Amino acid sequence: MTKKRSTTTRSDTKKPRRRPPGKTTAGICSAARKARKPEIIHPMLATLVDDPFTNPEWIFETKWDGFRCICFNRNGESRFVSRNQIDMTPQYPELVNVAKQIDAREVILDGEIVALDQDGMPRFQLLQPRVGRKSGLEALRGHGHIVYYVFDLLYLDGFDLTSCPLVERKEALQQILRPASFIKLSEHIVGDGERFFKQIEKFHLEGMIAKRAASPYVQKRSRDWLKVKTVQRSEVVIGGYTQPRGSRSHFGALVVGLYRGRDLHYIAHVGGGFNLRTLAEIYKLMQPLKTKESPFVDAPKTNEPVQWIKPRLVAEVKFSEWTADRRLRHPVFVGLREDKKAEDCRFEFERDTERVIGKPGTKRP
Image (tube, rainbow, N blue to C red; front, side):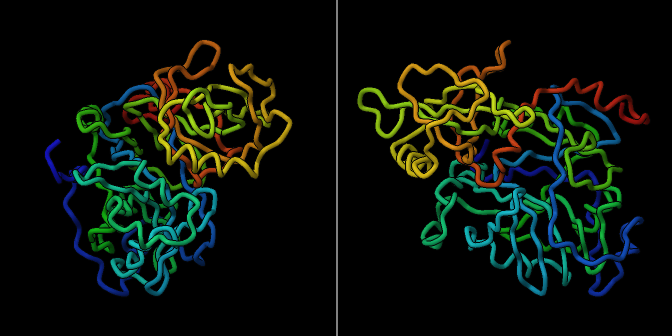
């Protein structure tokens, strides 16, 4: 990829005229309904499928490698809330003027906070110094270019838009958003998901999101939104750590698992992907959580003595494949996630794309 090139893809539709101030939302979205602005939104989540596809009834976007956040805007001020309802606003002072780029009084946006490197590429690791941090955040300016990529509009000046078709919500979003260096529209293409996925792979991005163009917004996981990954990644629960060997400091490996029902099942030891800083930071976070009891339904055997911890911390790992006995092969630490509850980290296996989407013009199975 060439230097400074944008990672977004232009929409196949023409950009609509900007919404005049005070224009009724009912004229923009067919199913908009008057409603009070909600205080809590649970983000719509995508179902994992195995292959990209081409279908004129779907649109395709970049799967950004950052923190999913709902943005509540009112009277020129913005509040960013994670999917587990943590207020992320103080951690991103670069986004203080987001509301000033919105031509509306009260708005709820859905998007992703992303850190771009010097080549304009998203890098999840650049967000790590902010995880759990409550002060000194101004000093982090310049350590990754922080951008809020917006891909949906849920509420606009007294109207709930969640029942509107996705393409109408996105059209309304284009009308009220004035992009800037810190807030951008996550653009899409229509229909040709296979071509789009090849571009995603070429630029070594995490994956793509496919969305049914006519779909409403629902606050749960849905088959109207699908995700196709270029690399295997998973959010996992940290249930313990092993003692270090040799010159290794703090800990040897994280012992991680996923939930099935109420039970936490062991899936891997994660010993790669750390540096001196992350070893020290994660070790510090684990100390208040130490416990004598294993949090796993079946305590795994470890090569070194293990210290169990309460299952509160969530990490993201990349790996080569799932084994037949549901273990991760070659897991590598990517970063910590504070935007997801441990109990929401569950087994997720790829579904067959064709069975999920069906044929064009037919309802999904």
